[in-house]
Length: 506
Image (cartoon, rainbow, N blue to C red; front, side):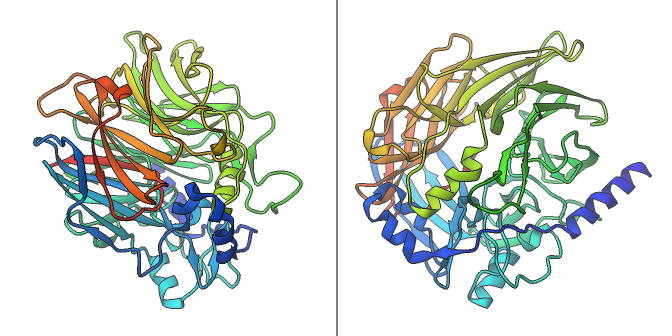
């Protein structure tokens, strides 16, 4: 009875959700003028309804693509930012577009499609923006009937159980057909679970089970989906920090681990001077919520010095019953509040400080030990990933996107230009710089067939080449990251910059 009431409570919150922001749309031509002298920012122009379909059956290949590398690499990110001469304010506002690279040995094809959400279709019919977003207020918006009214499906893409999931922060996952990227519609995992939040960073463990969370108000829902894509359980519990920005989570053999940064989304605060709309709450710590997977009511809350956390690397249980978690921390919510807005306006801004941390959490005493990996004391990192067979298990190596102070021309542009591999045991750092005129996106680890070692793998990731105004798919040897790509596939066009993705072997 208690669980049923909790689900009903969460569903009620979902049905009445609203997202009022105060910044009205900007003029699209203002961005065009601003980026005339900033070629690295051109991918933030995005696509239109008509250019949202991108197809190339044979990419230009360089180097040697391994014959045994076969599968689908999907990426997702905001892509449609302008309509009827108006432009969104915040990078996170854009409608999602899934990119698919079909790799068949030495042949690589690309397909890109906008996710045909209810929001996108309504705005296509209207010929203008209708729905409020994270950073943009739309006048005369129709009544919202739940999170999926404003669901942009723009953050991550994961193929699981025969279905491709396009995911957003606070609503349903959208199902897509991996054969042609056609949109199937919002996924309801079971009776009574419509529109419940299914967040953008699920974790698939070594046995193929998918774990995820969703948050709304002071409630958290923990999802467990089996390898065939069928719901095992949906547990609901209480959040110790109401209304916060909860973006990522980790899984261990026994636990779900959720960082809760002390950032509330103050959509009712205006832009300009005064308190920030997105800022660390004074006096509030970074909380790390560790829950038993079998019963999330069995939990412990750890408190650490306040910082912003978007992404985690991995987590695992220790022999003495503790938990180890890696994450990227920032001293403030600058990027959420200002950096993602500056990029959409085509103007420079300061770069934030981002540091990888590894914490050891004692489940008995409540003590925490945190080690910081500064990357040589310079630069910043983001998008940490581990070998997919080590998710939830001890993993020695983390791959991350990186930037370090090499290029004066890039000052004020919070964009990555390299990729690096960190040995968390020795601190050894190997990295490759794609160059002054490149933007490096998230790279994932792709195991070699039949191999189990963490470095018996390749790295797969995209970059934007500002010289060619084109997107490039890169393949690196995980054991020799510093040597750079062993093979590349070059698109004849540029793609909007994305957030996250995953490789699914054929």
